[in-house]
Image: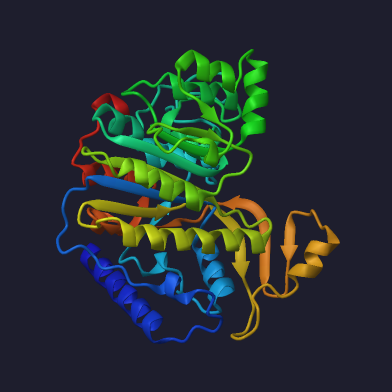
Length: 398
């Protein structure tokens, strides 16, 4: 049965790729960047480097909507051409619908937990009791001497990036979470950190009686307020701004990480929530452009690129015609200032909540062939560990 399912999936993917290569682009908004084919490495081997692209709330329907809005046709995103595809199930241990804390913790540690809990086991109680710290992929990388990087459009201490380097019983404790950057459990901690959230984290730190300057001085590690402020010769920069240019930040991070002889792990998050549907879909189009650029830059013979989401979202395309804009009705909705939980455009309906259906996992490069079929999101941790050739500590997942 597994063989039949895998064969059917491969056939469907081949048909999808044929459709992409033969269909015309209705709205050619930089189609070359979106449709550039990326060659699969000649032979599968162990990964020296792993790059995780995480679209927060970027479910299957959101990818489809981004392609339709950006190019007027389905299957036009660069990432939709990646040859290895699976569907990742995102639930926490007690509910059906996940938040970003459980979703990313599961991917980074191989252990599902409760919503709101950051890289701790299910024995934790949100905001009340610490659970057992679960060792993250980034901590394994630090332990083995790799360089590491975390980049996000969101607060660098928010749930998704925090799950890579911190452990907390409550995602809301962003001050406490950020201070863990300077007290790593393994290695010397995250090497490159670029993210937003300066005002929010700063306020939380103030409540704790500290701040960015105090932490920087105590640890002899500056915390810059802008990407441009970080000197080019600083190989371990931390930038916490109010807004982060993730495209520029990722390319700059790679300039640093690619000098590592031992390899690197880079995690890049881009917000894909579609509460504002045009903004959310444009974020995905922009993220896809970045992934296309990175895929052409790295050596896929020794680098695994993995795209996925922490959870899905209530977005659907339920109308539309080729040659007409997908976002018809958006300007009127925006002008009305409607803040209800339902967004109704001519061709798009959004229930602005997280949802329980599986999210896409797409991969290319060293070790990518193991991304296939349906699986729990914890399997992505196993795939990345296997790509590196590492075995998890028994105490980390048992």
